[in-house]
Amino acid sequence: MISLVLGGARSGKSRFAEQLATHSQLPVLYIATATALDDEMAARITHHQTQRPLEWQTCECPLQLVETLARESQKPQCILVDCLTLWLNNQLFHYPQQNFAQLFDQLINSLEQTQATIIFVANEVGLGIIPLGEVSRTFVDEAGRLNQRLAQRADQVFFIAAGLPLTLKGPAV
Image 1 (cartoon, rainbow, N blue to C red):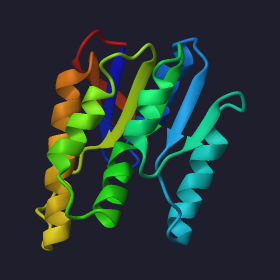
Image 2 (image 1 turned 135 degrees about the horizontal axis):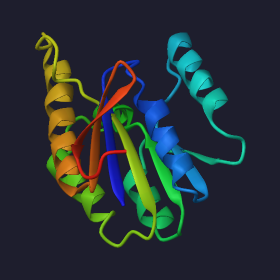
Image 3 (image 1 turned 90 degrees about the horizontal axis):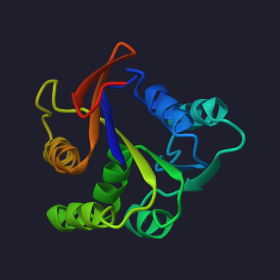
């Protein structure tokens, strides 16, 4: 089962994804993609760490998500990836000239033989004002493409607004 949980900043998407992981009744591997580049992000990371159950394992994975999923998805567990948008940001920062379509293909292909339940969290960044700078527009465009690709592959897709889930695809919860 592949689930995608979308929403804006502070929409409640991480909390909803964590509830899905808990309800899976499987051991949970939390894949964290954030990097603490400033004090504000460090505070966000700390907040998320304090919200997670102590029995969950954590894997810090700012860049090597495809490889990590290929390896970890062969185990009967629940994998919670929080979040794809920060992983994309890291990719754009470290490898701005890479072929993102190919990277997204690799991510989707890593899910084909999964034995795990995988929950992805991602920001819906395309609902606001069009960014002024080229890098910002590239980020928004690639985030939209990534979300579309994963939503096509996912069994369930949820959009979270004001802490409330809207089921876009699959059975409602």
